[in-house]
Image (cartoon, rainbow, N blue to C red; front, side):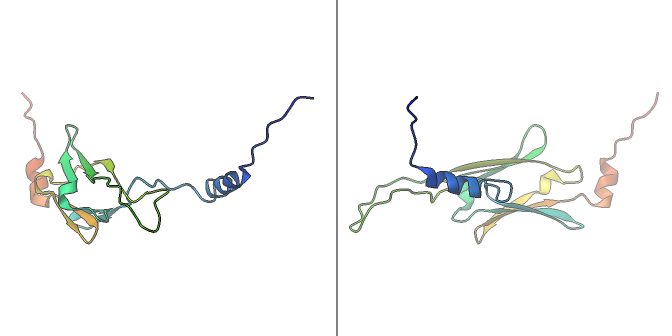
Length: 143
């Protein structure tokens, strides 16, 4: 008879099997939630950013005319001596995040604005007006 090794750590596998299945999909803990809202005049992007400031964000249009939102929280990890105990695990941080969004054709890229307010990054993407859309049409003369 062959010796069999048995692991005694059955408890973590029960939790993993229960929480990481089709009923309860494991959430991506590193990506903040993003909402996109459309009105007649603009699109609004809301990104959950608790504890972030405007200095933590970089928002730009890339070479393919996509909106790129990136954030990086630069924090120093200082080990603090606690009199009562010590941390066994610390997860209080979003360190780095980047999201690229394809912009619709009706967004006026020159008028995009952003602000951080109450832990939410708000990016306003104004739409072209009807007059601006007509000006943007290119007509090609046939020779």
